Length: 94
Image 1: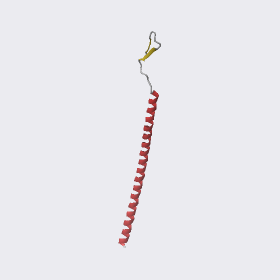
Image 2: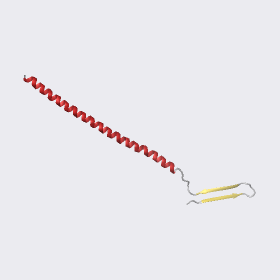
Image 3: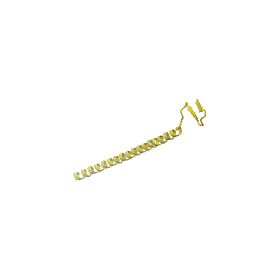
């Protein structure tokens, strides 16, 4: 509850008066600005988390593609090795 006291002093014979207003409750201000600042800080954090999660999944896809290519190269090397052994066996039998 706000209590407001107004005191007015009139000096006898003087043309001026003095008024003092005292408020017991502190003034509130900046509520909207605080919310705006909070939202302005939260939005980039959420965007950063989203972008980080997207880059992590693309890194995993790239790693899987490289692993698949390495496996294919390994299989091809085995076939070349088997063909070389077969050719070597044919040469030595003659």
